Length: 261
Length: 269
Image 1 (cartoon, chains in turn purple, blue):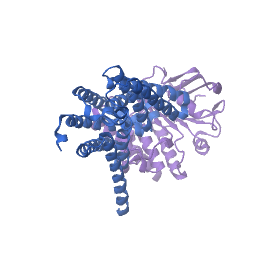
Image 2 (cartoon, helix red, strand yellow; image 1 turned 180 degrees about the vertical axis):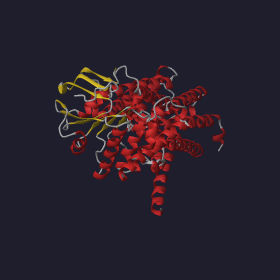
Image 3 (cartoon, helix red, strand yellow; image 1 turned 45 degrees about the vertical axis):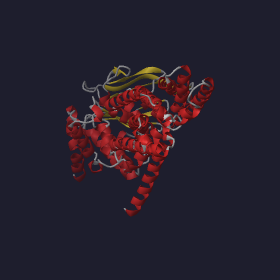
Image 4 (tube, one colour; image 1 turned 120 degrees about the horizontal axis):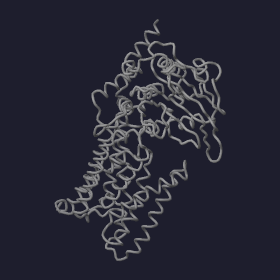
């Protein structure tokens, strides 16, 4: 099921005959698939198909009943490089009264050692500004996260996921509860990142229209009730570019010039 | 006015100012994680421990702490068994704590302290050892929270994202429980077992109305806690009222004032 076969395209996620049962009921059985570098994988399934469960197993929030998950080639129990993974959660978990500014939320995505009292270095602030700028939410930096619209919040969460310049971006139903136009521009941004940056995507979604529009009409593979739609991004030139901090800075101007052109 | 100059009142004031920092500080994490009732539950368990401590000898704070810790682990266990009915575990532990306390009260009939003092505080009996214990706990809580502020923010804001970023979430959960248990067990002497949770939750409630950022919210909870404890103790001292109850009423008055002020402000603006 993997398209890219070149040496540079390593396995990012390997799911090896994973089964999961909950209260003696199989949610899925013996699922195997792998996500390669620069793949965009859409994980689609009806409610109860186990999409979110699969996602939680991949990121280590749940242990599979049997089978193994490897991230960047390493068994998940030994995996340490979590800063290589950006995670955009479902938005509906957010408590609107939570006292945190957009800036604080984005900075919270930074990995690495922390100074006392959560203080940040100048470099950290620069990374934060770049991420905010790339997502076009720099004007909202000092606003309380709960005051933002759904679409703005999603951009903030994306900025937080991008601040470590991850190699793998995992999105869990990123557009639930967001109006159609905002969804469009959100997907546009993600597609752009997929094509122009060295990033691998795994997205759980119920939005068939977007998935099919970008990833093709039929799933590349199925496992039980889970459908995998795959598109590999390879036609671009900047395959070797991995300095996303640099690219993040230019993401917006790139996108804007594309729009005009 | 003489009372304010007396040694026991000044000890009360110092002790109050110490828990005025730590209790609201732990409270903001509990409230933001929707665990407000945990404070209440742990303090009920701690009452039983304090009572037992008096029955056995003179170790109320130590036994209060042990019971609060045991209760926090029991809550985690029960929470896993009941999953989405997590509050059930709180109700069970809370009533269990009071049940035990009532038995210990009757065991220690010759106690110089009556049940009231466990439930509503016995601030004027603070010893220098109590104060040193409070100081130790306060320093420890400040150091640990200061060191882990980033992690504490992350698991409070979004536990799943914290987990995906490789943070040891269960370690942080235990850390919060242990610190809360510590703070509660040193607070019982001042505000009483039944009123401790007010000192954990009401400053946080004020802060949610005012704070624009997480950093602000921490500054505000501590300020509100401090001012309320000092005002409450002075009022209680001058008019000879119950100290714990006065502090809590001052806190509630603050909350009402902030709500009122916000309403007026939003009408003008």
